[in-house]
Image (cartoon, rainbow, N blue to C red; front, side, top):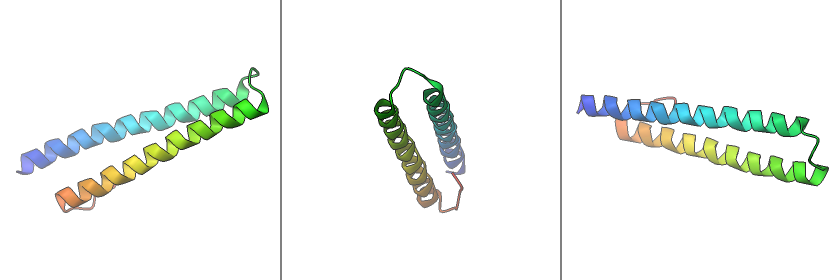
Amino acid sequence: MTEQIGEFLSGMSAITGLEDQIAAALAATASAVAKAECFDAEERSEIYAILGTIKADSEAHRSLVGRWINDRTGEVTNV
């Protein structure tokens, strides 16, 4: 059972790594949009709103997975 929990946590750690990559990509995209000259103010605002929604969804997912891991393992793990 302990081995299964270890494998499970390892898999969840990989997912957390992917979520870190998503967050970095969103930040880089927002930075690129800020520098791009091809968007007017309304388009730029719409893109920021979309990026913000994706970021909020990713953060909510990370929190949900963290709580699920804590419930599943009975331990408090910062995910």
